[in-house]
Image (cartoon, rainbow, N blue to C red; front, side, top):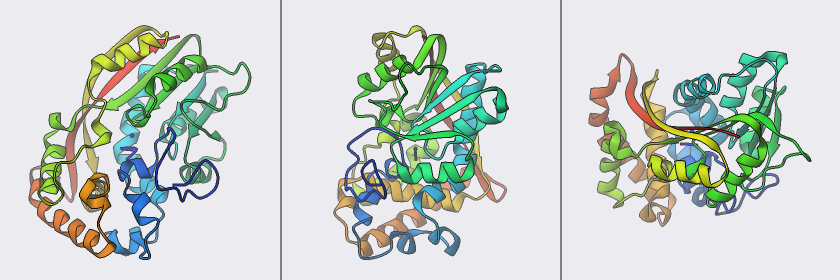
Length: 315
């Protein structure tokens, strides 16, 4: 996954200004911006969404509507092909967000398998339950997975969540705990945005207004530490490959607006802005980013290359 990846503590609506635990939610995508705007006197969606339709949606609803299908489903399909699902498999999706990987797994397994999705955000899970009530959705921390005694899975996946976990060794250890002997693991993390011209150009436009941006979405892009992390956790047959594919959005405007909000929210300058200043800067970056989109026009939409690390291993 902003997972690319995503509000409170572990229960109810999340009012907390900082995500202290692991998991990937709209706050992660917005780079902390939601923490600031949740305390604002101005409705952040009214101030920043590109149109009326988006302004009526919650952050998890926006994530599901505008990002889950075009951005995350292609990778979900790829991950599940890599682990070669078979009838009867038990599948665990860690940092599931609104549940795109879990849903694709359920589509492929039908009633012949069992799928669990875990995320720290109750808001993201509310959307996941509404979309796919037949899946076992659980709220929990990636470094202390909410598993039943002795519960293990044939397949464990984590799509675009690992880079956000503050305690990666603990999360990897929990993945190993959850995976049955001989089971299959797949973990995906975006490569550095320096390797993706489209995102690199958008970041450079934003940095003209915000200064240097350290984007956590692409913070675990080197394959070597991923491989070492999984080996140290006790996984076998660890292999990390780089995979690139073309991502297509039918409408590039919502994507550009959400990505700009992420840049503002994850920057030190943006976190200090008041509502009106933030709105002005978002509009300025969106406007100045338009020329960077031209080379990636795909009819009325947008198409660009994106690369991820895909780590696979066995239990």
